[in-house]
Image 1: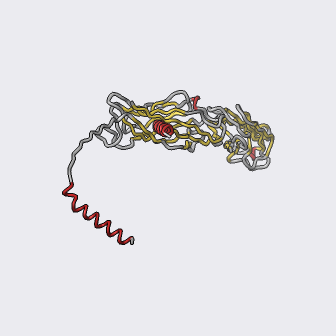
Image 2: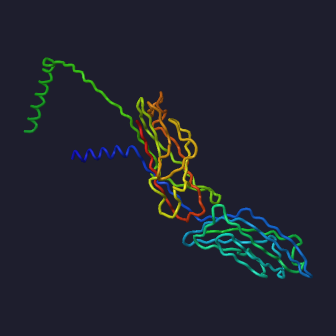
Image 3: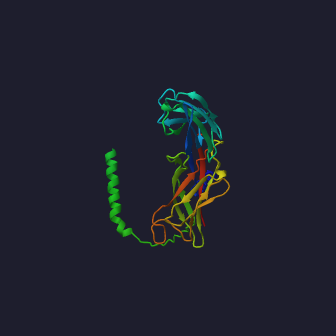
Length: 156
Length: 180
């Protein structure tokens, strides 16, 4: 009984000298685009007008480990409304992800330029990407000024 | 029967009371009480806290952690509070303290000398929180800390490394107070 008491006192004494705390963190999916820039030129080829541009960007992302995913979407504003204005694009990514492309498509809504699967990661400084795009159609179907592309990224 | 016995007892007590001044005596004794106050320390921290990140993507996770302490050091002694990771984050595969991504800074201590600069947590070394001088004591002012217990706030920061898989992770920190 005395030994038990001594052990108990020693335990209490030791506990009084140190304390523990649990530091918890919830790491969620995240993504962002940086340094988005576009260079575009316009040219005429006979009756057709071409507006060609390259939109470059830096992307950082982390998608959910099991059921996550992400998309980079491209939208022109104002988008040419004439159905004879057609868009072609090719995406290239410097890191993880699926680069998408399209040829002579009518664009009525934001289009998906790149997709990412679950547990996808870029480096901490991000990865570079680019979308080369071309609007083509009759001069009357395209604006005189190049439509400005906007990129957005969604992740889960 | 029982009433009668009770009555007899009261009478006996009264008789003793009236006689007691005659029988009283006085005796004065002195007793020395010596106490040895040894250096000692005790601290309190929350059992758990959660690191939160800001609105910007990949902004660092942060949390404030208050450390409450009581301490007494000897005339020639000192005191210190330190912190160390007991083990790495769990489950494995998440952040690792041994990559230097978990750091903290100390707010100004109301008593003692707080750590300076940014301290990096790992599993191999105890990092400083507060140093206490000789003759340190907590509570009451007049050379002791004005508050009892004394306290210091630590601001923890975990870098939001993009390469960390999503999930919930935790690491156990051990705070130790030592007084001599």
